Image 1 (cartoon, rainbow, N blue to C red):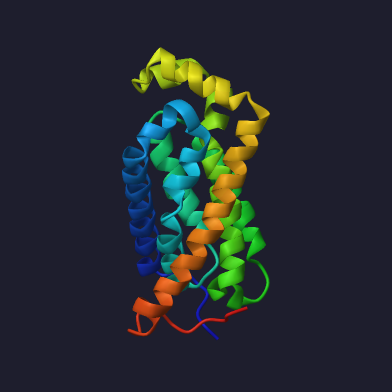
Image 2: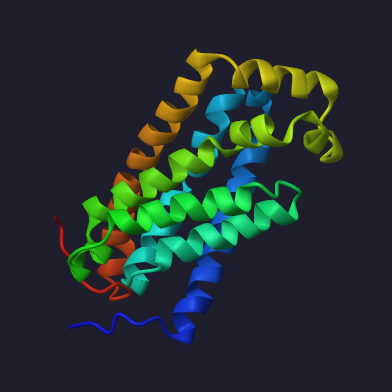
Length: 203
């Protein structure tokens, strides 16, 4: 049986993969920033789409309880340092929920289906985080982050429209699942065959 206790290497890996995920999200957000004025709610799903491969790579490499919680903690800290303080407890809460979804057999931590489910739980919540922050922190926080009044008005309109809220949740969910599916294919082709990843259940 694998050693399920976190090592110093595991802690370092969680931090590195989480930082890579944030950088990739930021790059995607910049590339697709033109979407914000007319379809802001779907930007989260687009930005999180390629992060799936980073998450799966981290999850499979570590293969232990606590990886997605650490992932959520690091991302929450980053957002709180940016001024969205509410995102720290919010991110941690859904990181814990995602961790609970993996409980059971230790093989779950290297199971594609279970990790996809856990990832989807967390990123759907993370993708809704901008709207949640706007509800809780209000306009002033985004003004401090140099958002224009016009853009904040549009964001508030999106965040109070039920159809756009559903669009945010569904887009993020579908792209998270698709991202994991593509990520699994890429990991099998380029990482597992090269011996970088241990074999894991296909359940």
